[in-house]
Image 1 (cartoon, rainbow, N blue to C red):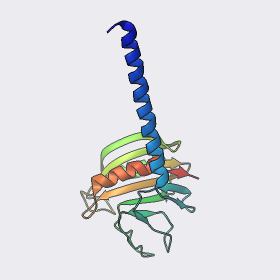
Image 2: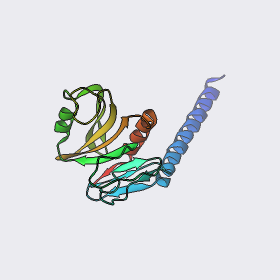
Image 3: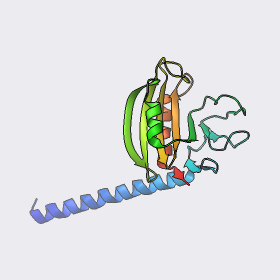
Image 4: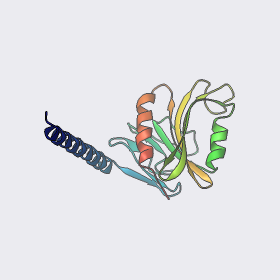
Length: 182
């Protein structure tokens, strides 16, 4: 190939690739727009969840707290239901949340600091130890904690029987990208 033909072919390739990237970005935007967004006024957040999934509507428990691929019921004043994803605002600063989550009650499998929704955040994967007050030893938890002043919004899933842990991790990753804090 002569140099000018080579440059022309390279320019066409770059334009083609950038056009495809633009189409992929537009498809991702329209896909998110077609998914339902759920708002929790008390928790001061809204979040997009997968189409076809269900969420609690607030009867006895604040809305948009639990998400699952099949219908479920939340009983007021009872333990949290076994669902694929839970979202909750915790009344503590991000550093205190991380310190409490990574203490003797959990083995840290993964920890990464990042920024989400313009706020400092931490992604954690934990395994409950014998000292865990809430989870049976060995139970894994995958979560994001997004700092918002003196509180955090926690988006998490658990590795327990009946739940698709790997699939739910991917859902959590998608959901936190849509999180809006108020």
